[in-house]
Amino acid sequence: MSGGGSAQKGAGAPLVGRDRDIEFIRSFVNQAAIGGGALLVSGEIGVGKTVLLEAAASYAAAARMRVLRAAGAGSRPASASLRSTSC
Ligand SMILES: Nc1ncnc2c1ncn2[C@@H]1O[C@H](COP(=O)(O)OP(=O)(O)OP(=O)(O)O)[C@@H](O)[C@H]1O
Ligand SMILES: [Mg+2]
Image 1 (cartoon, rainbow, N blue to C red):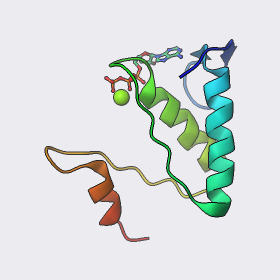
Image 2: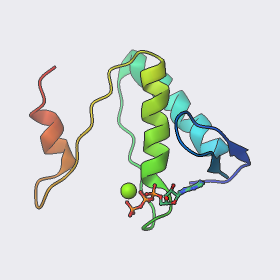
Image 3: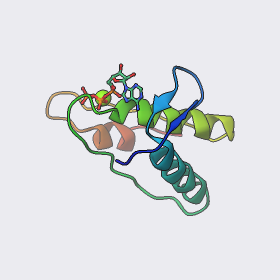
């Protein structure tokens, strides 16, 4: 994940230094709305992965996309939860 200034990213406090990451994720969301896709966000504990994904979800919801959320539990990865979600 990379730096930048400070910007308001939907609901919640401004994210500091994530302008380039936010722009990348918005571009990804726009493209995924057309052709699908997957994006893996990785980083050290507490570096800001969740708030970045929340910003992406807010952006997608504002664009009237359906936002599904899944979380891993024990040995069951989040992808298994998504596979079992019907929509
Ligand atoms: N760019 C940022 N600007 C301001 N606050 C931030 C930023 N990134 C993260 N934070 C704050 O730091 C804390 C940790 O962020 P977050 O929970 O998104 O990290 P995480 O990488 O998902 O952590 P974990 O690895 O534990 O899941 C939160 O309080 C969040 O609001
Ligand atoms: Mg997190």
